Length: 268
Ligand code: LER
Ligand code: MN
Image (cartoon, rainbow, N blue to C red; front, side, top):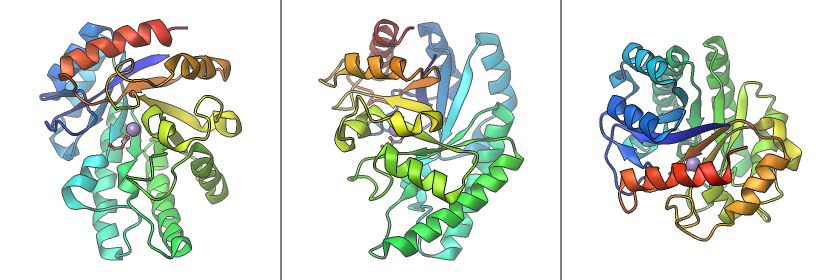
């Protein structure tokens, strides 16, 4: 299991990213706590110096587990469901920069908030989403990069809210280098039973986010992590578990409490 944590070069206390500031400093701090992976959230992939990060990660034994794209949604209000083809073209250009960075870092990219919302003509919107994911995954595949499609809750996006819905779409669209990112915070809102929902798509679970039900560090709320960890072990998941929680009461405390919790609950 790779224990990972979200870091960002943008300080935003409302975003579920515990460690923010200079990326290299955050990677060093995460490594010092015992994390073996870091996911980078940035609105500006061109600002990330891939060679420096690669050297640092090699020294510290850290993997860059994925690159989050959600801040594009926050910054430009673009999404893969945007009905305007010109805006989608702009987004595609930006996303290829994330893919190129991920390719250099041996990482993946996440499409979470960037899903946006389907219009009232859901089928027409889904055709747009399918088309965008097809061309992005074709480009990513050429660059050796995998894409994580995140199941997020209905208050943030009005589609792909559950693992099942996301898996069915990936399978029927024939998207070969796209897998699923499951997030315990969203699962707690959307899944009928977050402790037995993985069965039909185990092979597609490529990344897991954890935060408690209040999006504080795991153990800072009331989500039943005991049952969750049991289920993850039962299905034989041995991949990435990444902390994506609010910097509450502050980022360093959230990160420290998270790794302590992970060592007890998720260590196999
Ligand atoms: C992104 O990974 C996510 O979970 C969204 O809720 C964005 O905050
Ligand atoms: Mn998430």
